[in-house]
View 1 (cartoon, rainbow, N blue to C red):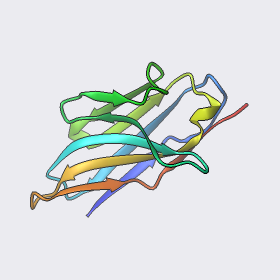
View 2 (cartoon, rainbow, N blue to C red):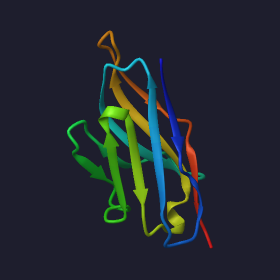
View 3 (cartoon, rainbow, N blue to C red):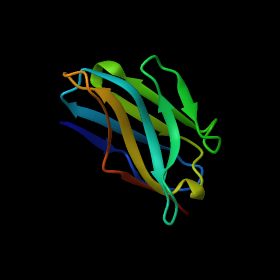
Length: 120
């Protein structure tokens, strides 16, 4: 069983920065893609950014140039540095990890979510 623990959310003023972190614990053989998604009230969950095991990144157009996703493969962690935050970035942010377990089965799992609120 794999558990994701997220941290770093909070309240920030427009133009400010926050850094989200997510650590994967449990029976992991290897991790493929890691990513961040978000869900605002009344809206569907949407992709924010993903990063492959080789370091290739993909961003939603709304965050390009402002957010940076990174990972530490040795520590099974993924981070999201969020700069120049806007009120429309307000949402619950979820970490997602696509991994292979010791039996070589492939799984995708989600964190519990962390609230990010951008407001003056």
